[in-house]
Amino acid sequence: MLLKILIVILFVAVLVSLSSGLVFLFKDQESGRKRVLYALGTRVCLAAALLGLVFYGLVSGDLGMGAPWHGQ
Image (cartoon, rainbow, N blue to C red; front, top):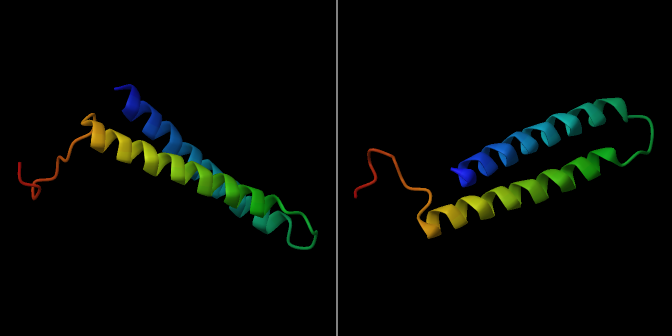
């Protein structure tokens, strides 16, 4: 259960980073600030952590395939 909560938290953090990058892109068009690049780096790190956590959950057996086409 803790793994699923961590996955949801990381997913929401990725969405927040994505939206903040969009806001920074529109706000910092004339200035030379690099907040968009920092938001991109944060998003990439969070997405890598999210993929790693999902991979860990699948390998350890905490997460399972629930799709109807996935044969058991």
